[in-house]
Image 1: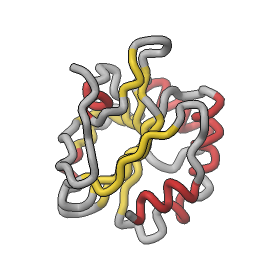
Image 2: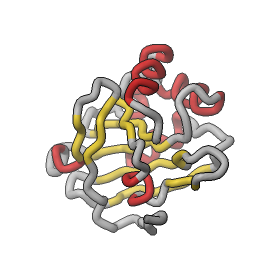
Image 3: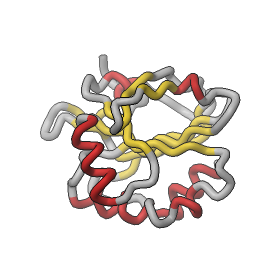
Length: 155
């Protein structure tokens, strides 16, 4: 399966992934209840991802001021790597593991097998009805800012 083409207004593809505690997370569990912000990133512990997620943690209240949105980091790394990454950097939201790359491909966020077989860096926000309300890929080498993620969540 290659990368899907996703755009604002599309229904978000359903997914079920494990978080860093090996708990299953389903998109459908949030439908009608919360917006879902997916922060796709290439790799745990890489310099850019570490810088980015270190800045997001202390700014969690700025990113999601009213608590009607749940935030998840998403990469192809293992649940074990996610557990260590979350612990080391005090990341306040759960990290979802997609080792099969199926979900990142459904969301158009697979960077390709070469050179790292990982996810792109991007932000996808899904509204309470299950539709994409914000979709943006960004350069893999440049970290997103707290402001850009906060503005995406408001979209």
